[in-house]
Length: 165
Image (tube, rainbow, N blue to C red):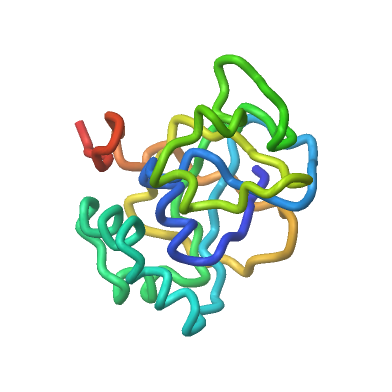
């Protein structure tokens, strides 16, 4: 299965359903299930980002602290279904790529400048126990975890955290 490495806190925000668009400077044909890996890097900037109100509120709503993020560095946290990647400036009815449809805090969680691309993600699934893995730039392959290793089902409503059912 394909894996995408992201820095924290962005990786956690994706697998918990708070970040639904991953923005990149490149466009690749990425669709379907994608594992989300939290990179090992943990900089002062990343720690400071966790203090920004939108980030702090999202992390608090899922019961995680900065220290919890540190424990998951270098691990696969879960997976999402990627609907595809689109130029930020495109208007795609039904998707969030049109900037007029993107609302806070999603705007705070990505880089939406012209020339970038947004990968639309849905159906986040959280692993019960994150899996250690070495990350890479771009995407890389990793053996797909068994379905029994994921939290049973997660449900999110706009502005709420994901919960097991």
